[in-house]
Length: 266
Ligand SMILES: [Zn+2]
Image (cartoon, rainbow, N blue to C red; front, side, top):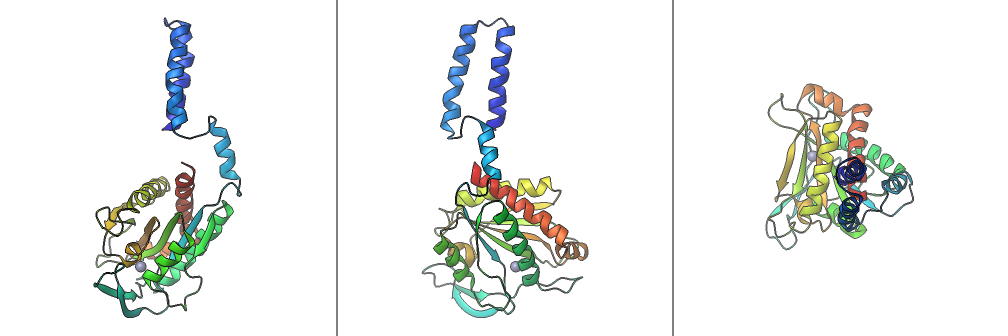
């Protein structure tokens, strides 16, 4: 939008002298537009920003990556939110591939490690909730890792499964805007989710939607913005195989990174 407006201003300025407007009017037009540009706190020239994006040491921006699940689920209960009497399993075991027979927690970590490398290459500081499978970290504890790191964004990487083998596509989950626990982190989470949807769509990845959830322990305990990317359905034969390919994982994670750069730099 900013770029479009900038172009519009330039066109306006460029056009005015050749039209019937006088030079005085053209000055007024430009002056009127300038404050809008400044209000957006963007440096006057977009080139500086583009340079900064390529520079890996511009500013510290912390992304927490949570590769969903772990080798063994833990059915012991924990509160779904701080102070809540409602409880859920600490961490479930996740799904498995219909074609590959691979466990979801394995695919989630594979993609997450690719994401870590891609983000670090772009100058992001990365915090991982786990880098191995043999851990026991509950969903509330994972959220607290992000909170403690004061992450600018947490991305939780998962795969979907449903009792409909034809269903495919990525789905983005965000905290609910009506929940007392997550209403404060909703706006930023939703903003990032929208950028992510855009980038995935650009990569020709089908996105089923952005869905608000108020029942997720990992969201309710989070004090920092957070989204879940359900990368696709392991219950679909073809998508399950794609989800295990390094190429497809990289394509998905590249979208996560591009969206993160937009989120960071806007
Ligand atoms: Zn999962």
